[in-house]
Image (cartoon, rainbow, N blue to C red; front, top):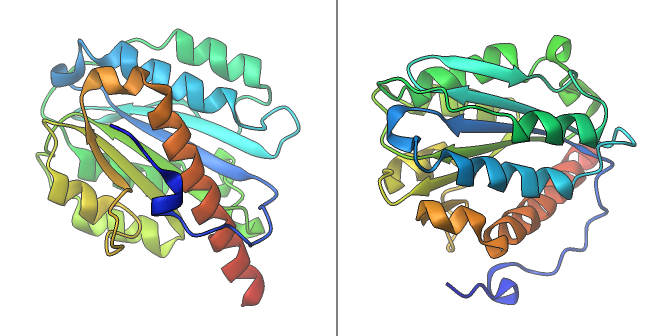
Length: 217
């Protein structure tokens, strides 16, 4: 798949935000067992590009299947090296069914909070990256809406086994002409640097827009 960024995004003119709080939500259900290493590598590649050591960006990883399990919070680590070491050591959770809705609600109540390291109240853009390998057993609509009401930018990436409409409902802006928040890919595509470059550009654009809108209020 060839991605021409100029065809997707308008030029970014807003000022770059000072940082971001980035939460990864990983599908650790039985259906992603063979593909989990590729998901883990994808997270690692994204983290490598973030500005963690100067406290601009913070990172959290949560894995879920029937229930969510926090691997680490936004305020657990303060260096990129610590985060990368932990990501490399992540083990597949396993379990069924896949309750994406419950996981999203858990993030709303327990991860995007000041006590867990979120700087939402300070105006720092909040970003959620969902890597999903199947259709949720429970409803995602209300939990996703609750996150959006907090101002969380949700980027949902699913495999070909995922429900594209469900991922569009989760994503922060599914009404755009190019629905690039929701990408259906094969597990092997997570190893392709183009996907993580594409995601980073999306996050950069939307975080800047979010920061710009907050300053105008």
